[in-house]
Structures are given as structure tokens and as C-alpha cells.
Length: 109
Image (cartoon, rainbow, N blue to C red; front, top):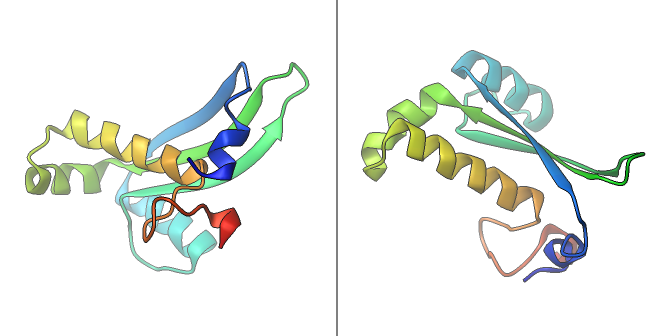
């Protein structure tokens, strides 16, 4: 388990916001925050902020429903399962799990 994920083990309430959007909306976000002018399947935005009530806001996950519809067939999933997988993928990013090496967090690079 990477160091960032370990930091959250002691938190009693951890929150993540999930939004499901269109190609157009995720393309705008991808362009604005990643300088990539095309839609992607999922984006994650770290917030990492303790709230006044003691809860911890980990971040935001934005899923592209149109991309999920396109790629669900490729992976043999229903659209619902694909969206679920993409939400999980986004949460893993918020926890610092990296594409290239899942054992290395962003903080350890």
C-alpha cells in the first residue's frame, strides 16, 4: 500500500464527489486542467482537505458516460459496470495509485 493510501486508514469519514458527464463536458475539463483537447473516460481531482466537521474530502471523480457506453463492449461490461469500474479507477488515482506502477504513489516519485 502506498504512503498516501495509508494516510487515509485512520479517517472515520472520507468523502469523494462523483460526477457523470458527457464527452463535451469532460473534453472541456481535460483541456482546461490537462491541456489535452479530447474527451477521456475519467478524470480525478485531488482536494485532500479536512472539513470543519472532521470529515475528510478526498477529491472529485468525473466519469464520461458516453465513453463508458463506447468502451463497455470492448471490456464485456454493462454500461453500469463500466461506469462503476471508472469510478473505482478515479478513486485509486485520488489515493495516489499510478498507471505505470501501481506500487508507486505520485508522492514517492
